[in-house]
Image (cartoon, rainbow, N blue to C red; front, top):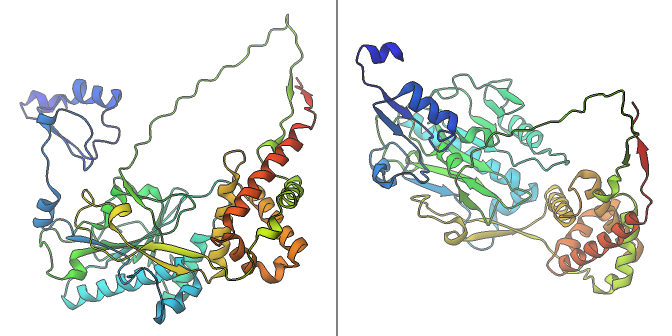
Length: 444
């Protein structure tokens, strides 16, 4: 940098993704005292603050007109109307909406690829598959389910080079993945791909239902907006000029990515002083105060008896419905609200795996805020419910699990079970409070 200044060259500094960490003290010091640019251009799709007179805005429509990004985003193409009924979709829903939406997205990627081939364009479109965030303390089998389905039904796998993985703990087949003719057809990822990753051939993205309220990141959706050949502009073909989202979700927000800051931990250590001696003791941790054990089942049964739950439960005519976004056309994320502008399509859950996922999420959410939503505690809530049905209605979990879950999660009954779960939590906490605290001595 010193030599550059010495020969009289002008320094123009271009900072991409400026909103992520570029305004920290360290970054500003580097720019002002080391680089000392004659001109600094700070680029971001999500500007925050700053001198309004120094901001040059490029409208979304201008970038579309230049042919650099796709014209529209199409969510859930083919899903229209308030109720999904009839035809092949109603048959496929029995396999669960995760697989249904994955299948739709794979077929859309193939359709786009065939359109490129027909035009003689060497672009292999990429399907992005975003896994939901892990549920703390809970096993998530969705990745394995997706990989098995891709391999068994479409011969897409890591071993044959058609599947890529971009996870913090596992990265496969990423070399040259950004090349338009790269062989990878599907990329599985989580949040890590949202920032600083560029692969213009990405054309379709699939999101799966989260156990909490879902959020679409503008940065993540932006991965499928770029045109694979920006120098050639649009192709005058709706398949190639639009981006496609498939998601079995509803109530989704579109938000900016949040930059992760640095965490500083200060630790204190006690110096050994042989002239001073004191026995140290601590209260033995009672994990049952934040996690459920078998006492919860007894608490639930007692609460259900006290409230007369048996007389309130409706056993017949139950169903559980899930909703997701209907097909629409999004011209700009800046002007569009997924919560306001998109209608929903609903289906009745017929798949036991999907019903169990809803049941697990119901149990997990009912534990907050007092208890950790981990597998052990979730299982205690489920055991309590199953035991209630066996005791009161002679409905056995092993033979009638789907029926029990459908009864509990239906609109007719879910509120009643939420109330009993809350009452049982209070009884359970009373039991734990009565247990004596045990003091443990710290050994030298």
